[in-house]
Length: 630
Image (cartoon, rainbow, N blue to C red; front, side):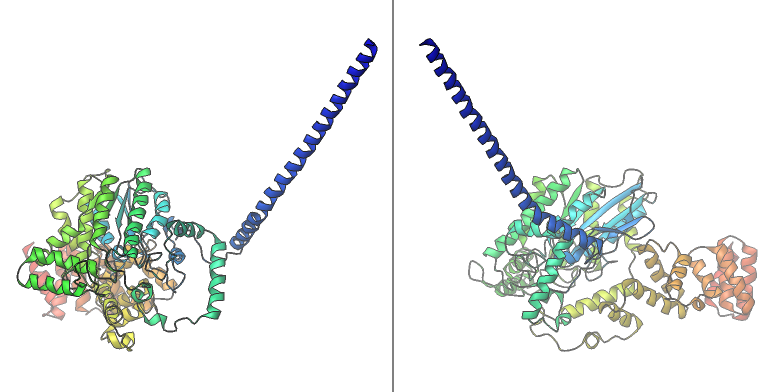
């Protein structure tokens, strides 16, 4: 009996073990199946990813499309913002925003003071860019006050962009070890690329816009955009006269955005959120930053699109009321009404007053310095109301206005102790502004180009309801060589450098050496490879853009005198004298060069020969009088 019980027990154990083994086998089998399924899903997900990676890799190998790099090398270990970088913000219109081509060292020097300027057209210096931009005032002032420092002021502002572009640019800026960042932006928030009322809008989703900006770093995005553009072009007609319209007329899609409307509030929210994110990134890197408050033409710009206010008055009615208060000398009331008229203007090319409130609030939140541009403009305007005295159109300053913006930022830099620390100022603060203005690098060609751009701008919408059928040449009616060069540049027939070179060459052939040097010195000042006149001439000769026959010993002697290279001038002028011993101008210049190196015997000898040949040589008579006093 006991034996039977034992057998039964053993059998039960064996049965139990068998069931357990079967369960373990089944479990292991299920685990293998599950693992296989997991690997299947992983592979399923990886296949499209690998497919896109392969396409991206192939596009990069074959150098498809344009280079998306933020910075490119231009030789001599210098970097500059990629001129094609702006393409990423424009899909619906054929436009690439210009940049100032400001270069900086690839490896930052120990004595460098590096400043980046970010913004849109007003920061870029429109219509006087690049030399009229406020960044040029700041650069020149820093160079004069801190001559032993390597001053790098890099303006990467672009026309027709807004804070989305600034947000996209800021990581690349922070990678380049800036000592200071200056921001002047806000006017393009509605109609700039990705703005709520822009033709380049992607809807109202901030997340979508930021995702697109991120994806723009990949070549495959260019491929998709180009493919879609090609397909859409088959089913739609492009505007054949696109080139004849101004950028303002192309960019505005929602041509009416009333005050406090849904789109208006979206624009304010967009500006606020983007500015906050920008300052958060900058502060996270402990880089000093200054934000400038915005200015517009208040007194002399009639509202573009009249819209009613909450009390039923339209923008134009408020503007006319402001004019009446101004005429009656009620300037404080007039100022308030002019600002309200601007805010009621439903065509939002001018930033509303709300934006300066946003700047004040967010700057306070991030403990950021503010440049009081608006206050300085008001102080320098008649009866403290900004108008055509400092503006060329609705919001872009004239050259005096740009220098005031530069002054506002610089004085904030001084106040916040954001200036170079490796040397003491070489000019007293009270004299710095006037010294900078006296040395500001700006020519007649810059002025005419800017004025002509404004003239063309105001011959199109929204300044005029009906665009003139005249050509640019008919509108501008060029009267001299500077006007003609300006027109060629505006119509993109020649580059900025070639425009300056053409103006320089014409003055050289006319023996107007001082004007020639003004243009050449700007080219040398702006472009890193042209270190002096000699290398500039060599470079342009190799490019077949100058005739070496224009550079006679006589002209080279005068150029050397104006550059205060007197020993070199004497060599050139003596060679010239061998060809024509009775040239009174050469004799005078030789006398002047000898006088500058204090060789008064030779100076007297040559000035006497000069006056013997031409007793009425005014410069010779002045020099002789000066020598007689020594």
